[in-house]
Image (tube, rainbow, N blue to C red; front, side, top):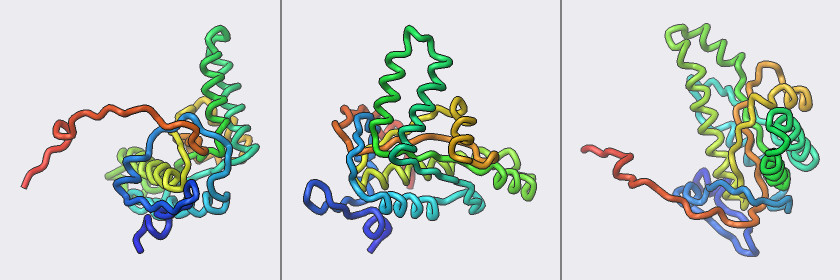
Amino acid sequence: MGFFDSVFGSKENAGSTVKKDFPTAIEERRSFYAISKEEVVSDERIREVIEHAVKHTPSAFNSQSARVVVLVGEQHDKLWHITAESLRKVVPADSFGPTEEKMKGFSSGYGTVLFFEDEAVIESLQQQFTLYRENFPIWSHHSSGMLQFVVWTALELEGFGASLQHYNPLIDEDVKKEWHIPAGWKLIAQMPFGKPVSAPGPKEYKPVEERVKFYK
């Protein structure tokens, strides 16, 4: 039994067992903005899936610099209240309506995954391998991007819809204070998720032949 079969591959969905292969999972990972708080799988299952992703997603020099905080229930709601209030300070009052609606959309979901990178790990590698000093922050973001993709796809396989948001650094200090985040953890992205309420619209693709060159 393969990686996605054993950890992410099977789920109960609308009363029937659905098994997706990896290409299908990639294709069906979309940005879902209409989501609800309805339970799709248990919190224990969510934790299992995310911990597995964090453990096995690759990182440069096996640095394992990724850090993740998962917020569900009231903690999830609190994050988007903090974000809304942070935005209220910088968005003109007469045009805040659409922003407020967007925040309500995110808070209507079941939970949020916060992605961090531990800067202490990166700085340690910079000191050990000075030749690559300038590259480690870049590679750190590469690793975080891979983890975001793995978690996003894994949540889709469990029946959730998710999207990727970036309200950092606006909310960084409030997030660290509220959830006692170590000072050296740098917030990279936020991923609200929940049960999809409606499907995303059609997506346009540029010709893949213009984006991939293949030689043999």
